[in-house]
Length: 253
Length: 314
Image 1 (cartoon, chains in turn orange, cyan):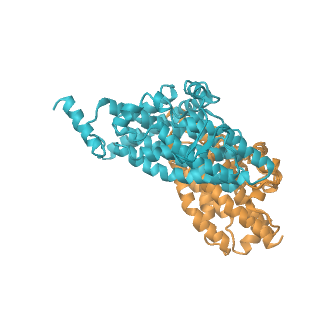
Image 2 (cartoon, rainbow over the protein chains, first blue to last red):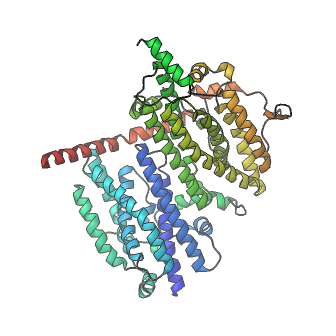
Image 3 (spheres, each protein chain N blue to C red):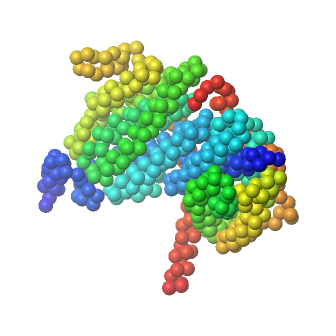
């Protein structure tokens, strides 16, 4: 695997995470329990779409086949997507959305912290820019973890259900491939295994503070996205997202 | 000072062009009219998020998706801002939202029309926001300080949306034949509702007399409507699109575009609840409120627990 191939894979992984999570959060528009949260969720969606644009544009440049951010977002099939299974899971209720978001925010935050030290100019600049956004995302979802976990009996139960549903998707956030090895050797990216330790410590502390329990999945974790094997949700997400450019391939928008 | 005297002073102040500020004495009907207008406006921003939100997941490029998300976020911000302006008149946001979801309060009936194609997103920005800007620029000169200042700020953002919407539709109109047809169809469906959105003709507008005497509104519906028509017709021509009105003509003498007869029957039907999406829009707002009840309750209980902990610690 060349350095360029490894970098393309890494950029696509990050870009697809941002894109699919942004897409999911966009579904919340007009549906939140109060205007402030509607604005906050749209804001996070907008940040993620913005990040996806940067990352996919750079991925296209590194690939060198002339593909733009839109070619990559709209003209790839689901097996070419490399987003984690976590971000494609459905919104569910607000508890599910918050748990998914918090798990991802802490992961993304520490990944960006690591990328701020990258030897790659793009990755470093991307991390420096995005860390500000993600710091806000993490504080927003953290606060809701506490509010809902330690709120009413009902909200507590909904949060525990959401954690139980989503926990099995946390494992593959940290799965490393050959691409990671190549880029780590170049000093471009941090080791996901190192991030996993920090992530576990932080997330488990919050779960405890929110009076919730870390789920026991009997050791089961879902895997697949690194090889393009997704959950049933992704096909529908792409069908909806890609419908216009796919049905009118000659059109510019 | 008796009521008649207070009312006279109030009217004098308005006639001299001064702004009325929060907590000043105002006639009860002035307060009622303003709450009605500001809350209708706030509700329109919130309900207006729905037809646009309908296309977030299907926006055909990432740039357009980001622009649409940002626009809808602005609308939600306008809603918040306007509810706050209404609160300066002594009414709670919760009460106003309750009026919306129980169907007691009105919102701009244009949002009861569906967004069927991507071009509709352009049409809303260009036509609906365009009509809103013309109306709100007028309202920004109104007598109630908090509302008129809200209008100034909102108009700035709306102008941005208006240009983005026009650009979207303009680009479609220069695109493939299929895209051009999409743009023309959107104009066909949104033109008349946008014209009607500026309110009944002066002769039939039941609220206009009082609201103009108090300078809540400073121009009539028909005057504002004419301004919207005059600025929009040339824009349609520049994009190569046809306004769906066979009677449309330019009057050289007055310098104004004259439109054909407005079908007010449809307007009143939609206002009374019989438009294509009235039930769907209301249901969406009701569901958001009801499904969010446990979240609001949890946030409240959590805040109480935190406050109790603080008191205990102190």
